[in-house]
Length: 425
Image: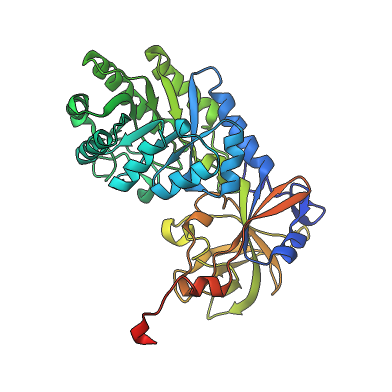
């Protein structure tokens, strides 16, 4: 599914399913995030179908988009989730996802968060260090509970992706080094309150080639054999996520769910393990767009700027990861319209506040709507209130219906998060 598949033109107007985007923008106000229910379901079905012949559970990596409505879409389709904080765990439970379908990852789980996971009777803790292992054991004993665990193993495999989303190299903060894995499992087997159930791995995100997965799966399969020889009962292997998506018009990765599943089956079917899978970006990225309105067209010295009402606090990926998002006019230009190179920037008082740099675009005018595509993943969840800008609305569309699934707070609510001590009044 390409960047614009969920946001096609009809005549010259962009739609999401059967809802016209200009009418939606008039009702909701800009900027806002918009998600297609049909696109979310289609992506989940595509991934689920690829693994239909293998005992497996899809644990959606909800850090990509943790909106309650999005979680409920996948929960109704039988998905579990992978959480990385106590807050995400509470969101998952609130969305009706049972503990038995929740895995808990993350390198810095607090004692309170570990206790939350035990109380929720989650499927598995993906433990990332020996100190975490010992703390979890202590808390489990204190609560009279048994914690199901897998160690997140760092295979020292280069995911061949952006440095900030590559997590499987030896210098990464994540996981237990492969060379120490058997020793740490030995310690886990001796600690009270723990039950070893699996092995976990996640090497990075936005991976569009098979080679990193091939290398990592080979390492992991060998480790499973070694652990079983040591007497460890390895019931499941958590392969993490990382499958990439198309962010450019012409980009449709040749390596998709079917190829990914075939590679996984080749390595793990002989081991008769259940596979846990943690797709995140793959399920939501191209199901969402950020809709923004042009405020000004500004001519600088040798450069033109399209100033829009969305900013880096709404979508930080371009400045944080140098990420590319296609930007399409909601009103399609006439065929043959000329293009010019512009920077698409927001109102935030930072030079890093941009959505695109040196981008070829047809001319736009103040008031025009633009769709920043492939924004369903790591968009709203990474947004903030810098410059006292309010969090923007999120909308879910199904056929000809739409619903506000996160409203834009008032300024009073934003300011009301602060308090002034009596001695300053």
